[in-house]
Length: 114
View 1: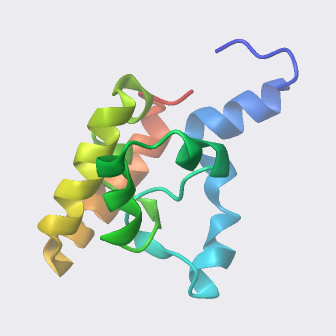
View 2: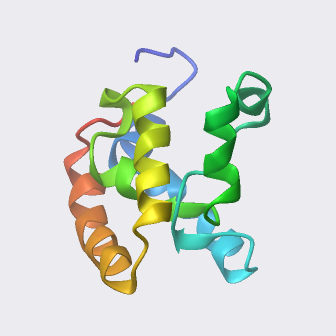
């Protein structure tokens, strides 16, 4: 993605996912968890199909999740929703730990980042 509004520093922050750190405040306030589906952007919800809405109901939103460590922007929206639903169905502490351990590599590699 070549957005002329994004500076070189901004591109680096996006590629390494360091622009996500402010979300830690949301985790500390209890509005998000560390692991879970990404919170939707309001305009996305307007075009959700019925089955897409399940991702909002089945797990608390999180900073990282299966989608972030398994493809990121290389996957389709429907595949992202499927990963979120799979996470909700198979949640365990061990799954959260595995996702948290994979997250730094996904962030630093920049693979699949916009």
